[in-house]
Image 1: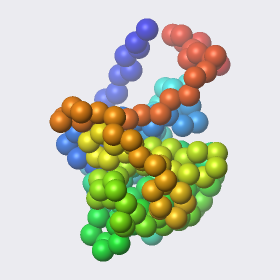
Image 2: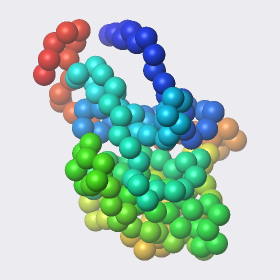
Image 3: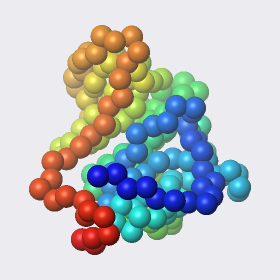
Image 4: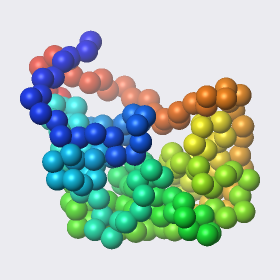
Length: 187
C-alpha cells in the first residue's frame, strides 16, 4: 500500500544528471546523491522509512570529483561513495566509506582501483556491491555488461547480459522475512 507524505518545501534536485537514479536502501533508509538548491552544495539525502523523514549527510571534505561519475553503494557493511576519475589518465575509481553512519567525520578514502586495461570501458563503470571475499561487482553505464574485479582493479570475469540498445539499470536487493510497517505502525 502506498502512502503519500506531504512536504511544503524540498530543496533538492538530482546532483548526478537529468535522469533520476535508483535510491540505495541502507540502514532502513533510501539514499540519493542530491544537489541542495538553497546552499548550493551536493549532499546525500536519505528518506528514513520508519520515521518517514528526510535526513541530510554531507559528502567527505576532501571529495572533489565530478558527481556525474559517482554513486552510492554498500561496501562491506558501510554506506559508501564511489567516484570514477573520468579525466584521470589511468581510469581509477576512488571508494569512500562512512565508518560510522551519519557521522561526517567518519568518511575515509579506503581504496583506489585502477581499471586501466580492463575489457569493460572504465569511463562508464558503476559499482554495485562487494562480495564477502572483497571482490567488487559493477556494470557499465548502459547496464549491458556485468563485471567482477578484485581489490586491485583487475577484471576477474565479465558477462554481457542485455541486448537492448537503451540498456538497463541494475540494483541489488536482499530477501527478508521482515516487512515494512503498515500505515502508522512502528517496528
